[in-house]
Length: 154
Figure 1 (spheres, helix red, strand yellow):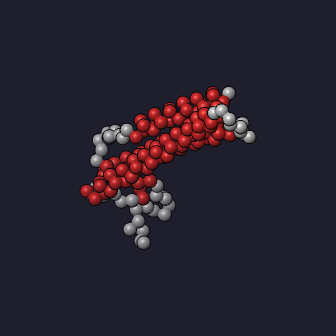
Figure 2 (tube, helix red, strand yellow):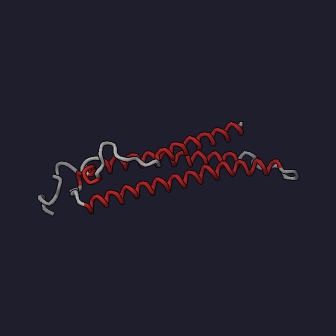
Figure 3 (cartoon, helix red, strand yellow):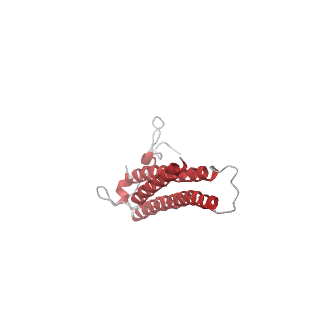
């Protein structure tokens, strides 16, 4: 590849959107939209996974507490193990959500910055998805569940 065909010079490495020649066409606009929707689907997959982790963690704690209360059961060898497993699952769900929110916001800023802003066709601020509000709500639910189980342990 000749130096004229490249967008960058050897003395300065390409970063971000500078690496690509972005042309404002309907193909590039719809490609941007497909990429944006892919980011949304990825975030919703993380929400689904975190909901399952938090729910399973809480359910494990509740199930084994009820199992201990049934008459005729022998006491468990490690009676606090289900609670610790439940706490670990809840915490991993919350941490997965926090990481996915960070990743989502980073990718959203990247897709709205630089030369991609021209093909996005967005005005100042643009439209935002409710997926971040749902993720924040689920983080709050997860933190509440974590502390509800933790305080029951004490």
